[in-house]
Image 1 (cartoon, one colour):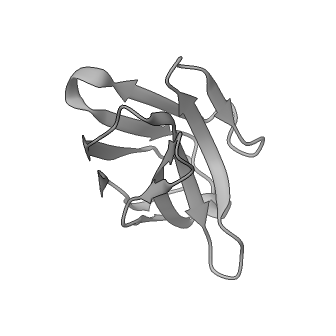
Image 2 (spheres, helix red, strand yellow):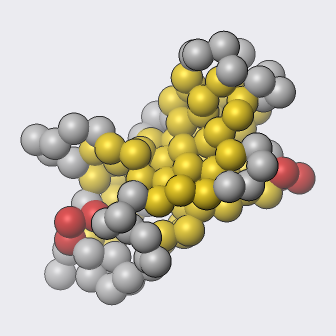
Length: 116
């Protein structure tokens, strides 16, 4: 029904920046929110940021002030700008779509590693 294709990620130094992208295609009229999740080894997958169809945003406390979620409707793309990266941000980051039907869509995940 919906396809999410991620790009970005990589290895950065502490204090560096990355921008993750999620290209959305397919039937998207029933999506009410787009999200970024992350999962580090040995930890549960956690919600990082949310943007609703009304452009309301949410951030988990550990990234607030450093990360920004945004959407470019013309490009059908959702972004996660990550600044002032810390080693504890190291994780696989996943794009996610929340649908009115209750179903969810997931991207393939992209590795972000923050290390000196």
